[in-house]
Image 1: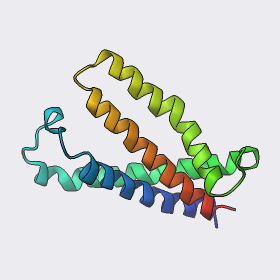
Image 2: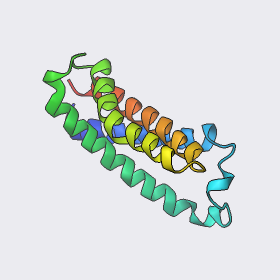
Image 3: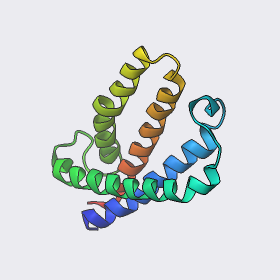
Image 4: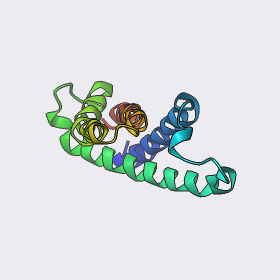
Length: 134
């Protein structure tokens, strides 16, 4: 399968994983970080932005996977895609959210939610890219 088509599919999977994490998993205790007034009116715009960003993310992940596929320790496939996703996640998202949590005590729960949401999103998309791109 072409890397760009695999990237689009991975973007859809990343969007669904993100939706599940923020609508089903992280529902308790997040009221302190935002107002929920007029959320229904703003929801279509927020969902559209999230979808576009997820598709761009899937394309970038797929492109990077194709470039590094021969050099992955786990080799091509599901584990290779998850390896690449985890290697990209660690220095960018993980260290940034942990580092931000050091200075912003009140925002630490939100940062940790972002920490795990990105981990799930990236590994789900990495597994899809690993399966579809051979």
